[in-house]
Amino acid sequence: MGIDNKKVVIVAAIVIAIVGIIITSVALQGQNSSSSSSINTTPPENYTQPSQDASKRLKIMATFYPLYEFSKAIVGDKADVDLFIPSGLEPHDWEPSARDLERLKDYQLLVYNSVTFEPYMDRIRDLGYDLKMVEAAKGIMLDQDPHVWLDPVLAKEQVRIIRDAITSMDEENSRYYDGNARAYMARLDELHAKFEEGLRECERREFITLHGAYNYLASRYGLEQITIAGLEPEHDIPAAKIREIIDMARKHGIDVVYAEEGIDDRLVRALAEEINAKVLTLSPIEVLDDEDLEEGKTYITKMEENLANLRIGLGCR
Ligand SMILES: [Zn+2]
Image (cartoon, rainbow, N blue to C red; front, side):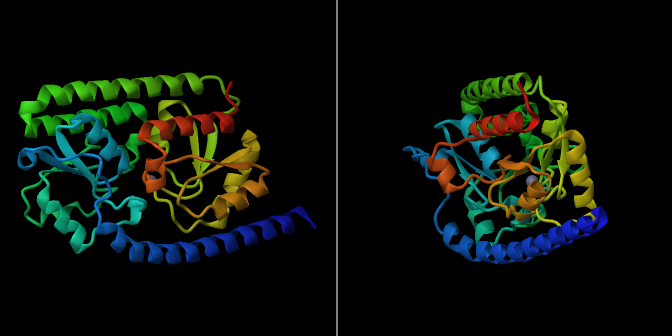
């Protein structure tokens, strides 16, 4: 078979895979929305035992996992934090139901990332609840790309923004919150140092991912993200784009392609097979499911796993 014919067959196979993925993702979305109603009936997190003066405690809702963890680290045992997006659901294509919105009535502070990630903020504002809303990516987001939390340095900025919002609402405990925030930011400094050290000497700087969540991370550590899809995980991908990625992979000697948890990885696998690469996981840390939480996984441990897998794919010493 001629090289051109072979290319046509490969591209056709990939197009078939893409169509398959679109069909499955539609089917999976259906499943998600039907299962979400049963998840909604119980609060996703039960870590904090309400104290005696529960009525006076600040109640904070965080939209998705990293903001939940940052908020929780700041308030310790002096306020309550819950997760708005039901555990296990991908935030990019999630919209709150009337019942989800109703839950917000009992909260005083809503921590969200940005309207490019949680586009339903106007719907919440229109409810007229006495709810302060803090945009945790404010002033640090570039080009409508919401994924700031994947850069430990910007994650620190998010902790600062959340801390300021929380202390302004509960000044009585502000010193306690500030101390906790500093302790958590010190852990983010350590994480940043590990990334700097771990990604210093590598065979290549380019890595291939499905969804373009790693621009901030890549620019922080001098890497180049090559994405199959766009800023959101599920998109229609033109065959020419796939061809371009295959060429880039060959040019840079890339032998790892990154998939992510919770997303159909058949396209990634087809691509990996084509360039003789293996598939590893790189997590955008948009979802931590119940299993992750039971295993004690956190934003920090997930970032450390990302670093370990990046080091393999980049051939770092
Ligand atoms: Zn994303």
